[in-house]
Length: 208
Image (tube, rainbow, N blue to C red):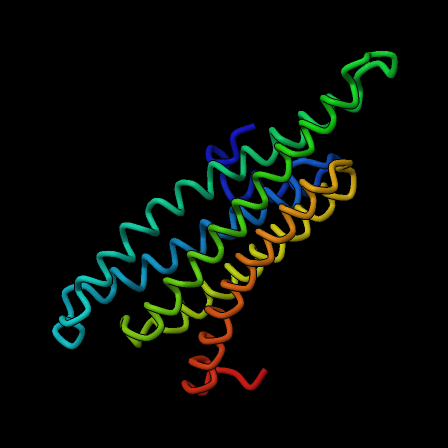
């Protein structure tokens, strides 16, 4: 299943089917890609405007980074589906298979990699959402805020999917390492998000 080749309508109808994939992780990756695309849109609407000519360089940086993030996030959506399929295949192995448990644990670790990377992508999107919200075309600042909200959602989705797979991991040192590293990244994302929320309030967009 390659989510990148689906229409939005096809994806929505596929998600609602009575199957576990594509699930939250894949949907979160699509949300991250859309967030990155919104950041790019604001940057594009800023370039070439005399009022914002001092920020041309930083907007080019936004575009370059968002292009990579959108591409990677869309790939993650499909990788998340494939990782889940591998977990299910491992659980279906005969119980008498001496390597069954090792294969399950390896598949679970692979299934953790994709949502963990989604969290990293979301953090980076939030970093650039703050930049375009501050220095981008203010006629499109609501789109920068929207990108941040999508990225925050993607970050939480990544966290939920890491946690559910960690529950079945037996290696405690691995679990602790993942948790420590994940919450460090989430902490960085939170700092960006909180600064963006201050910008939201300063602009009078929301009292929430």
